[in-house]
Each structure stands twice: as structure tokens, then as C-alpha cells.
Image (tube, rainbow, N blue to C red; front, side, top):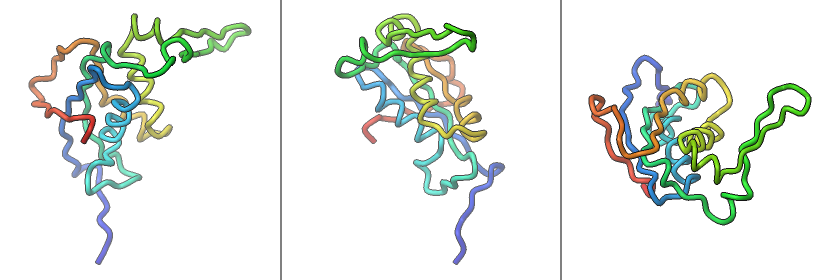
Length: 144
């Protein structure tokens, strides 16, 4: 008996919707990263990009537990001396909740070409409206 190896050309990708309303940001991000990577599929192959498309709606209603809104910061550096910028998650969730969700999911994907391709299949929306009805997305519960 031989081991099955998925091929990039034969992977059929489906679309899933994850509703982040009243759910922790981290748990929603874990579920999205698992689907984007393809680890929920029985034919998962680590070196092949066999993930699927994910739409996250209501990113603005995702919650951060504990004191993370005030104690957690998004930091980035311009590359110049004194160029460190930091934004608290309270401000980030108020102004750009899509970015906060995307950063959480991106950190959970592998940091290589497979992860780079997977993050392009993530679509995040602050509200409950999205424009991907033509793809016939399926509802995916975070608890599954």
C-alpha cells in the first residue's frame, strides 16, 4: 500500500464563511488558518498547497479576552532610527478590525511560499456583507 500524495493541480477548493461575531479573535483565526492550510481535509499533504478559501465576516464584533485590548500592541518598524510605531488593539479593533484579524491568521500560517499563497485566499470583512455569493460559500462553525 502506498501513501497518497495530493497534487496542486487536482485540489478542488471550496469557499467557507466564518462568522466572528461574539467569538474570540484567536479561536476564529485558528479555524481560518486550519482551513487555509488544508489541515481539515483527509488528503492533507504538508508540502502541497491544498487549502481552501475563507471569508470572515463580522470581524469588528470579534472579542479579545482579558486585558488584551489595552495591553496588546501591533508594532511595526519603518527601518529608520526611531521608526518603531505601535498601535494598541483597542484602537486597531476600532479603526481596522480586518487588519487585526488578518494579522492573527497570517501569524498562524507557515512563513514560506505556501503561507504566502494561503493568505491571499483569506477575505475579511468588518460587517456581515460580502460580495462572494457567486462562489456559493458554505457556513463553517468555529466549534467544529
